[in-house]
Amino acid sequence: MKVAVVGAGAIGAYVGAHLHRAGVEVHLIARNAHLHAMRSNGIRVLSARGDFEARPHATDDPSSIGPVDHVFLGLKANSYAAAGPMIQGLLHDKTTIIAAQNGIPWWYFHRLPGPYENQRINSVDPDGAVSAVLPVERAIGCVVYAATEITEPGVVTHLEGTRFTIGEPDGSISSRCTEFADAMIAGGLKCPVEPDVRRDIWLKLMGNIAFNPISALARATMAGICRHGGTRELVVRMMQETLDVATKLGARPEISIERRLAGAERAGEHKTSTLQDLEKGRPMELDVLLQAVVELADLTGTEVPTVRAVCALADLLNAQLAKTA
Image (cartoon, rainbow, N blue to C red; front, side):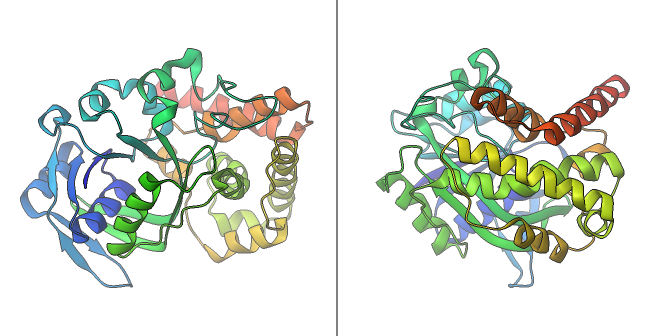
């Protein structure tokens, strides 16, 4: 099996190291000091589960790799539309694209029976720009329940979680999913193949849609948001509105809001990826988290006043950040 990791940052390099450990031919696509370190010394994974090193091929030139069986996308979703030059040479007739993204994916309505089948979500696939370079028929859903960070170039520190849930948009248990899952498991990760991966998407989104923008607006950790009475109530309202949209679309995450809050509290003084992007002066990944849910609320006639208000505030913050970039 041959896998290319496009965007071998904290999550991508972590996955690539485990797949390489399983004997997969892995090619990491990265840049700058992180790339140079991986070329020279490989990847060093630091984890309470056990440290290890891996030396997969690393490059900044995807055209040197050739077609692969699976493309694992570690890019931010707001980079997908521009990923064409990196992706095109990696594809053969059956190559899959496994996107480790937060929020609502560009393929969400692909092969989903019902009134919205094949509906395009403009906030995540504007004018079809993403599906033009990442064809929906190649997509395998992926929901990441792992936290990692690059603590220095070439060094990935694993903080928590090892589960990468994957699934087909049509709900089948396909050979292409099980092939990838088997390799992930052989490398030491959890990779269940779920017949309803959209349920997992909404389950994770319940937390991301609230904690990520609030953490950026308030410069607060997840535990800090939970401790403050006002922001805790704000999280509850946003989670409930998100569940209302999911229900209208036929998805039913099997978890209570209180249990989801408890999980966030256990994360402690953790900075969300959105807050980390803000602190580093990078664009925040908001379209797939907030604007997509507002668009889906409009599509289904669901009232989401709290999500809509936080979306406006976070969008303004993103615009201000862009002006100073």
